Structure formats: structure tokens, C-alpha cells
Figure 1 (spheres, one colour):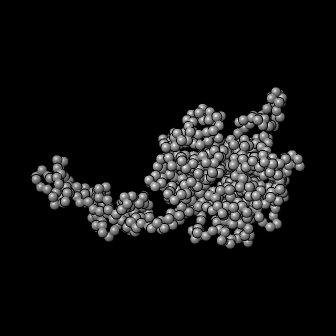
Figure 2 (cartoon, one colour):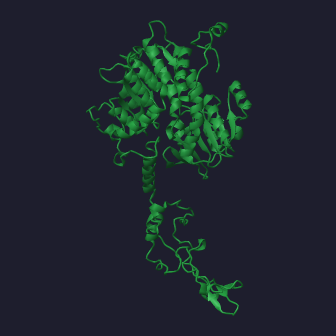
Figure 3 (cartoon, one colour):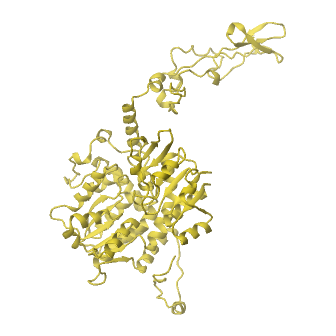
Length: 593
């Protein structure tokens, strides 16, 4: 039998010495290359490569055998001393046939693409530009940011919308069309809020209301703001989180005439400047506050006490903000009625639980690409947020531990199949640490020092006080930006942890949250504003109130048609037996769902 001509066939043993996966001088791979970026195509072969195969011969692995040269079945191989360790075939007749030579293949521009290592400054600039372009709009795959504006602070730019109005400060007004499309998508998943807008816009229950808001500025918030405007309110808005603003949505709101002061990636100084621009405007006195976290309420209370006294009502949706309101009330300093939306049934049981159950996985995946199966995770806090996080991680195959101070929540965790521990018992072994307590200094420097190499640390609570990030900003530790909202904090011995969103709220800083669940919360907020604004004198005193049960039930009922759900109605006899009104409320205020 004759030989097979194996000429020009590349093998794994003969990869190009300067291929994209060749280790650098430091012994590290430069990473996975994009074939399109590196010029990986047949047409891009180096001139050093041999001419293409002759007619009838295979090229690059496609072999056409020549019957005249097929080798005998009993042919043996032996080293050929003339081929520097190559091999030769020995036929039965004693003749020696040369084994195929392996050709090295080079790719065009590979040295330029892979072997040229940027300087530290250049690498940081490259990383920053890539991060901004890929995450500027965290709700979509594409980025709408004009790269030429990336380094310019919005505070230094003069922008006007198409109507000539410039009472706003955002990243880029040119993104408005993209933001409008995202708002339209959100409207489809917010049926209750859209139904409320349709039913009440003729009555204008918020006519004369001047609402100043400080929440996450997302497409869902935009639907809420436009609903408030349709019901008669004037709105001015700032962001409650420096990382959660969707720039294109802020642009759409500004184009629509809203006074919005927010952009993704604000500094701390920018954050307070934006709040002040919302509040301190000549000829405009707010009479309603919609807050998320209490920062806006705190700012007006401290900086503009006379303005604070004229506020007609406050609506607060976060545990942190509610805690601040109760502190003011206890000290006798709360001079306006406030509505605690955070502890309403529709917020606790739906937004806090179901929203976090889905968004915790989304946030971790987008930032770290982590595999959850088999990972050891500790979740600090087993309230509704903690319950949602634990349920999602357990379903993905993670080994979940829980820390808790409340024996009732702790018992719930145990009954749900989670092991209750103290943080110091598992801190050395866990792969992921998640805080969701609403407290401060839950993860302190002592715990951070003891974490294993590569441990992921993040927060699902509203405030950035749960992880002691300030203790990590010391000379002996090195911070290395990996991508937007992802940092390596490196210890002198080389150990590193992965810190997400600098300890701020993970899901809204690094990913998105389910729109339908936010429809429930936004509708609750809108109804709370309507209730406080239209309440007769004396109904609400200078204290903190829960949303009336009837309103909670109304919000829930507005969302049922989406599921084609049909409620059972009580008969007169049944209603009399239970002592209820046939139209509700169906549970007393002390009932725990």
C-alpha cells in the first residue's frame, strides 16, 4: 500500500509560537482572542506560509488520498535522524519513506494584536473604555454612549432638548430615542400602573402636586414619573444610587420635559449636587417627596428646614429610609406625615422577595460569570430579600448558609433547609458573601482579611453600609478594576477578593430587575402619593403610616388580569359569617401573609 501525503497538515503539537494563547514573559496568557479581531481567516495567512495545496491535495486538514502512495498496513514508524527527531515510515521491502512535515501557520497582525502589551496607564484607559461601552446601559446589550463625551462631566456640559429646555443634567441628550424605546417596553410589563394612568388621568388627582423624587432612574421609574405627570403632578428627579441610572432613560425623560439630574457613575459630590439641583430652584416649592433610601428627605430636613415644614407628605420605599423616618418621629422632629411603603404587603411580599429571587443571579452572572452549582454561599439576613436570594441560589445547586439575629427569621431559614451559622464560622470557606440586612458593618475588615482567595463579596441591601469598604482603602491593599462595577482588592500576599459595585446595591447597579414586580411597587407608590396629597386635614398626623390594607388589595387586583386570574366572590351569607365586606379588605392589619 502507498503512503498518504500528509503535507501541510497542522497539529496541536506545532501551534505557532506567537499564537494568541502563547504565555507572556510573566507566564500568563493574554486571554481569549476574538477570531475576528485577530484576523483569523484563510485570507489573512502570513506570506511566510507555503503556497496553497495543489489540485487534488487537501488543505488545512481536508485530505485527499493518493491511491498510488497508500502505506502498507504493516508499515512501521521509526525516528529519522535527518529530521531532527522526526519520523519515517519503513515499508516491507526495506525502503524508508519520509514522514509528513508539519507546517507552522502564522496569522496576520498577530504580533500587533497579541504581543504588544499596553502600559499600565494605557491598559487602564483601555479597560475603562471597554467597561463603559459595554455597561453604560446595563439594561441592554448595546451601549448608546457617545465615547467622545465619556470623560466630560455632565456638570460641565450645556445641553438642551429639542424644545430648547435645559433644566436637567444628564449624560447625553442624544440617547433619548433609545431611552424612549426602553420605556415603551417597560410599559408593556407594568399593567397596573398603565391602568391607573388610564382610569385617573381624567380626574387629575395630583393636580397642583409638586413631587420631588430620589429613586433609581430606570425605565420602570420613567413609567411611574410619566404616570404622575398624567395625573397632574409636576416632577423633579434625582438618582438614589450613583450606579443605577440608565443614561438613555434619563435622556428620554429630559427630552420629554422632566427635570432630571442623574447619570451612571456619579461621584459622591455629584450625587448630593444633583439632589440639591432638584430641590433648590427659584420659584418652585415641592409639596410631596417620593424617596428611596431617605437621602432626599434628610437633605431637605437638614439644608432647607423651612421648605421641609411645607411638605404635605413623604412616601418612602426602602428599609433604610423608613428607619430614618421612624428615628425622626421618635425624636419628635418629623413635622409631616409619611407613608411607609417598604412594609406594605405588596412591597414586602413581591418586590423584596420575587424581585431579588431573580435579580441576584442576574447580577452575579453579569459581573463574574460565576457557576453557582456546588459553590458555598453565605447570605447575611433572612428577611424577604434574603429569602429570595437563598431560594434562587439553592435552586441553582449552591450550598447556602444563613446568618440571622432574629430567632423567628432564623427558624424560618432552618425550616427551609438552610444551615444557620455565625459569619466567623464559615468565612474562610465560602465562595460568595451576600449581605441583605439593612444594617451597618455586617462584613468588617476582620472578615475580609480571612476570606479565601477569589471570594466574591456583594450587597443586596439598599445602603452601602453593610460591607466595610472604607477599611479596604489602605496603602497595603491594591485595587484593580476588572470591569465596570467589578474590582479586585489584592492583599500583599497575593490573595484577592472580588468586590461588586463597591458594596452598593448589586442588582440595580450591575444588572436589571423584573419590570412586572416593579409595577407592583410603583403602583403602590403612586397610590400612596394620591392618598397623602388628597387626605383631608387631620386624617394623618406627623407620624409614619402603613399603606391602608384596601390599597394593597387594590394594587394586587390590578395585576391579576395579566395572568387571566379569576377571583372567587363571597356570598352574602359567607361575608356575614366572616364579618367582612364583600369588596374587602379581606384581612385585618395585623394579619401576616
